[in-house]
Image (cartoon, rainbow, N blue to C red; front, side, top):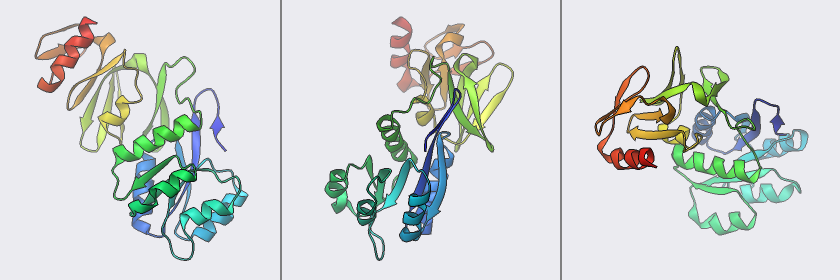
Length: 236
């Protein structure tokens, strides 16, 4: 069951797939999203059915084509089956999956950005508000913890290979996700991407030119493809 308090909301999930490599990918993607708790993974769909009858699960990542029983047959076996995101290498099941009220249909191989879009749909369908009621913070996974970061404390965010670095005045946090995914969690009025490697807080700008932005503690370049959007945002 979805756990909620004043600081965080966690979606409990399981993943079912007869391919161990597919489960490893889902594990990796879930680890990048702070509000997902991947409760268990199963290569045997019958073990997953037993687990679903004994635990409150909010969301299932479910492969469709598996030996002995399909993901669609699994969903039909339990009356109050949790929300489902189907994962499959076979595109011909799409219509059937939507007839079963699936949240989304991920066609293998799918990347993290596509996975994250499916999670955003799940969040909306489950009526989940991830930030505090006043929208002043976000949750991110850093090392082995989920931490709360106040938006007012963020100066800028930097891309670093498979990680991003969230810079604040006297510290930073590393988290394994993309600039694109973190930007979708931030309010548009306050944050803007200005470069392939940087997102800035508009409240921290001291001065700027057409080539760079000076924040309180650093000067960052403005990418050519981002300049028009930056100027329009500033002028508005």
